[in-house]
Length: 603
Image (cartoon, rainbow, N blue to C red; front, side):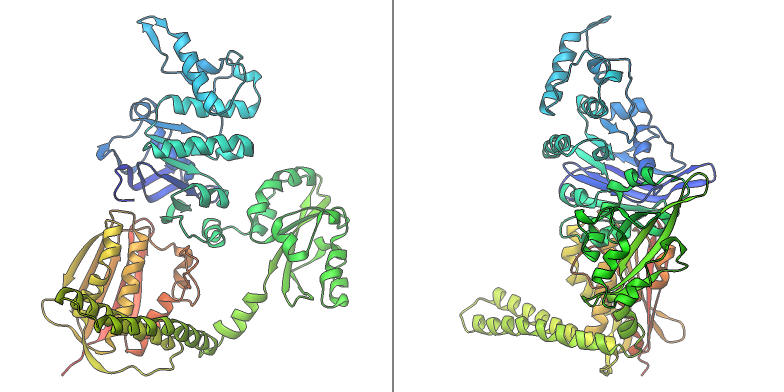
């Protein structure tokens, strides 16, 4: 959203609570007229990030820019003056005051230096709450109102201050769907009037339908910032929540089955794996939608033995009967082949009462059919033959429309066109040919094609790639620093495949940075007859826990449904076929640099 003014920018923010690091080099920005969702697991740093803006938390290092000016450490008073309104996760009302007094606490309207204008404050409060469809008595102390009304009053207080930036921390957890509809209408109205909104939520469907952009925090680091348009819900969930459901089940804070049932009712619905809660007799007490889809559960199944469900769906009764025993005694996850051909992995974790007596179990159910296939057929197959077949199919399907485009270009050329249009047609033809060759290079993923050994100027390859990506750079207001060797840097290989490598790495760098970020691209002759290309960014970095997997086929942290996770894997294979290599160094919050090395063509 670079065409809109940037209301807020946080750069390299560090916050600690004693020995615990809450934020470690986090960047964040917010534009006027956007809803920017903030998601992450528990203790990811979401609430700390917004508390900085309200003055409730202090930064140790970093820069805060408000409305284009560098700001000092915010205080509650300066936050109000800067037009920052916040509704915290926990209520911050004054219970013994009424609604009007709460809405205008800290900023009472006065007619005279010492006289309060109660009539005007009551009028404005009634107007705001009327738009929110709240009709309770404004003169009643908040302690006597129901909880949802108290949260609406807190939201009204934030609106009454006419915020430029509005922050909502898990508000939808406290209100009913009907009440949230009025909140959503209010948020869309604020957005249309230029307000920037930071919206914290664990509900992925809410995020995807409400927000314009989303930032994922994980372990105090910014994992990703991207537009929500076209995102994949499951991948968003996987990137946001690093914990497994089994870890949730192993928590020792839950001691009673009834309390667990109540607390899990809403939480488990967003999990992409099946969750079933059973009592000590094995009867089903609770399940989520994923379990329903995997095991064909329905309302009539509640309080029925889970073992009977397994018998009905298992391919072999004997295998299901083997799971009839005490599920809490399972020493390891159990697998069951279904009539449908799927394979389920079922893990059980016991739930204990305070005295140590087993109250029941949480069952985690995963469909491992695809994973079995991928591990056995693709990932463990040294020649990647299955992927090669996939590449052939993709290449064939993509070449069909490319052939049609080339034919239309030939038809257009038969018409009378001026020189400028003819030049553009030639450029389109060249790029269509390049696409055709890049599609064909998918076969290099299986190492089935030899690499032409022509001489290529690596510097020219990089220059051409930068030209092709100009639109992406402009769209995100990305600055590109080019540092090219003054002389040609020759290597032997295929120009189009090497261009594909540079395009992929530079596109990844664009995805990693926030709007207004910086990318550096350098080409030089390195010692010992190597051509070296470095592509760096000042983005969110690659978290340590996934660095070993970034070159794995099908592994991706991108959220688009169209992303296959083959990009870096193909890049590595192309470079290895050229006798080269690829490596990277990365630091969360401080960016990533990929280094490509190719043998110089020595005459």
